Image 1 (tube, helix red, strand yellow):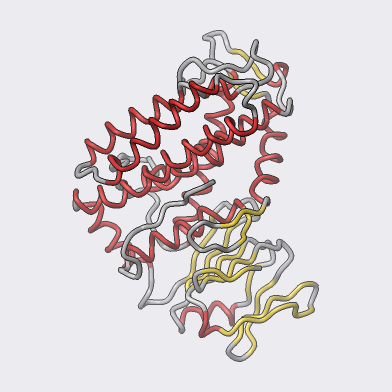
Image 2 (cartoon, helix red, strand yellow):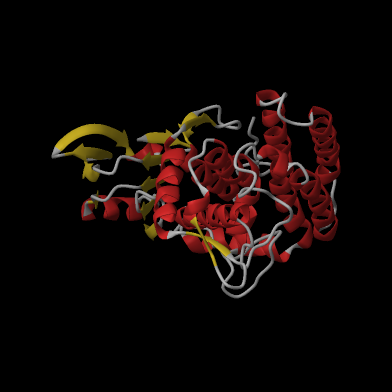
Amino acid sequence: MKQLLNTLFVTSEDIYLSLDGENVVANRSGTAVARYPLHTLQSIVSFAYSGASPALMGACVRRNIGLAFCQPNGRFLARVSGTEHGNILLRRMQYRAADDPHESCRIARSMIFGKIYNARWSVERTRRDHPMRIDEQRFANVSAQLQAALPQIAAASSLDMLRGLEGSAAAAYFNVIDDMILQGKDTFFFHERSRRPPMDAFNALLSFAYSLLAHDCASALESVGLDAYAGYLHRDRPGRESLALDLMEELRPCFADRFVLTLINNRTVKPADFNVQENGAVFLADNARKAFLQKWQERKKEAITHPFLAEKMPWGMVPYVQSLLLARYLRDDLEDYPPFLWK
């Protein structure tokens, strides 16, 4: 359990939440292991199977404390909230911002700034860890190009300008992705991004990781009361969780890309883990997909220090914290949305 931004995160799967006077009580096997005063909380996010008592749910409604339930793997299940701070008020603010091109650009600008910042540090991480196995000067040039793009992104005045800057910076970053693959080059290589369907093993891994990250971001947004379908950089499209795609941008290089590279470079995935279809499409085999999911969940449990809060937390909590920060910005509690800046 961890309290961040006036939100209680219940990350232990065997915790049952109950009410005792003016306190929420965390119980394990019938024994109280922690308690938190309700007046200090704005919301509770539980990843536990056990759930919460009806009395606590009622108390949260009366006190306008958001209460969200997710599966331990992060899948959003349901949310209870009171009237004053319920979804409708926050979502109205979200929709107004999405309808304003200037405000949409301002939020998207922060997210893309985070993406390119994190892409640069992914390049720098490989420069630091494997200087003898790469073209160090080539990596240095790409790092400098990404660094030079950051002030331009911060100054972008329209979504079209922002997309152009993001596209150029992303192209530079992907130009060295293949050089970050240090093992099994006969099977694992990157020539270009292919999606529906992926046409090589690396793209198959990347697409699967991106789909999981988008799912985690959508669950996080719903848990804090935001609409995962109403985005800023990614505009409205039926069936597309546009805000989840926005939120995941800053986490692609530092979480999804690095995760896939680690699986390959540590020889966790092998050529036999893939099925090649008649049309050339490449997909993970069933057993390999299960192993991928297990490693993904393990990675989400690894601890990092959040750069804005300066607090330690599991990687898997980062989308929830970023969602909370976005909600706070939309409510005018923050001057700007602070992207996740990894290093």
